[in-house]
Image 1 (tube, rainbow, N blue to C red):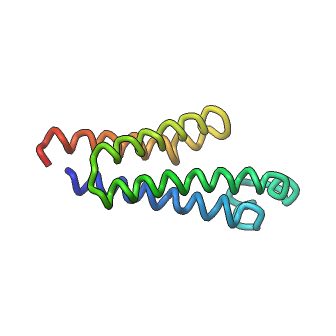
Image 2 (tube, helix red, strand yellow):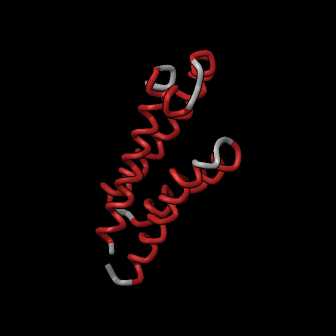
Image 3 (cartoon, rainbow, N blue to C red):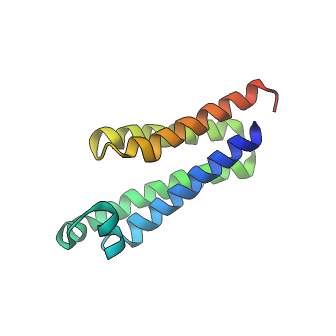
Length: 121
């Protein structure tokens, strides 16, 4: 169970590295505009905000990777909860799909991390 928890946590970390790259480097680019359905004017006017958001996603990824490297369950729980809270907030305030792309994967990984303690692994 611990191996599955680590794989899920690692996949979530990688997805946040992807969010960082998308928001910091490809927001005002045809790739970012296509993914988010933005006009060039909208992406240009929001690029600084998106870069800031990307940086925060990078910090979440760094925390998850640190938790994996340190093999510390409490760090995994903390950073998975942070990702989940950010996903719920984003889903409520920005775009509902964030609940499915960020909050749900974090919740699943968190449940598996918590369950891994019960089975002694």
